[in-house]
Every structure is written in C-alpha cells, then in structure tokens.
Length: 202
Image (cartoon, rainbow, N blue to C red; front, top):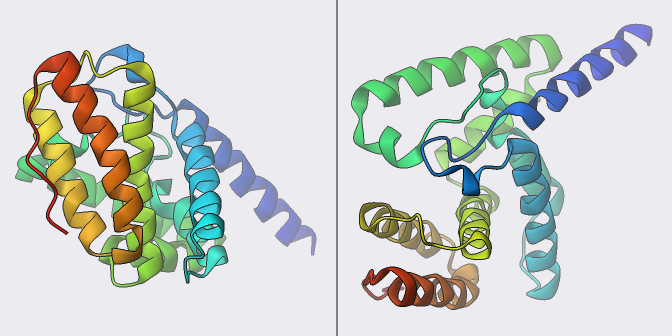
C-alpha cells in the first residue's frame, strides 16, 4: 500500500508542474496563463454546460479527458502554438514525438489509463472527447474576450473560428451555445479590429 501512496504523491508533484507551463507563448503577454488554470476553467465550464443544458455525457470521463489532454506538456515552459503547429510539418513531428515520449513515460510509471484517456482525446471518436475539444477552444476565446482582442491579428482570428467551427459541428448539442459565444467574439473582432469573420454553417 505504501508503494501506491508514494506513486500517487509523485504524480501529484507532476501535476504541480502544470502551473509553470505557459499558454499562448507566441502571443502578447497579456494573454498568458498557465495550463493548471486552463484546466480549472475547463472543468468549471464542463460542469456548468452539462448541468445547465442536460447534456448526455459521462461527466467522470469528461473530467478525465480534461485532466490528461495536455499532460504531455509537463516539463515545458511554453505550450506548442496550435496554429503554428498545424501549418508546420516539422513542428507537428516534434510535438508528436514529445507527446508520445511523455505520455508513454507517465503511463509506464503511473498507469496505462493515462495513455488511454490521452488517445481518446486525440482520436476524437467519442462525444466526450469532442465536447472537451470545443470547450478547450471556448476557454481560450473567453480569456481573449475578457482581456481584449486588440492583439489578435486577422490570420489568427480566421484560423481560430474556422477550426472551432469544425469542432462544434462534430458535437451538435453544443452548437446553439457555441453560436452565441461565437457571435460575441466576432462582434469584438469587427468593432475593435475591423476583422470580418465568415458566418458559421452548422
């Protein structure tokens, strides 16, 4: 039993390291936050959305997917820039190698459930993983709207909305709420930056 206690204590120390992994590394410091705070707001959003809109989702699985979806970033100073990663094959390969190495090491040390949940999120084959994917993006949007869109450029605005549209279409129960949040972001981008975003097609 002592061995299990120690193993649990050790992974709790690993979770602490999420507090020093910064998001939005390539953006202005005004948007910076750490991965741990990102997890916290994602869990709060997931709980509120599932409860308020009576979404037919396994809440425990949702929490587990949130818990492990960015675990591969432990040990980093900044996370990978999502837009840059998608457009650069070299960065994609680097990210994949690092993710696999980190997740495999954690799974070997702390349990295969880590790899299982991480792979479920990455494969996007379940409603829970698709739900977590879209709230991952919505959390970023709320932070940007709360801090102001002044540092956002046209390229990033078009990328974040077009990719989020794809995520939302894969989990239809979230679409009505997603549309409303998207309207708020689009309005800010238009009024403060003059950026015009194409309409969402469900």
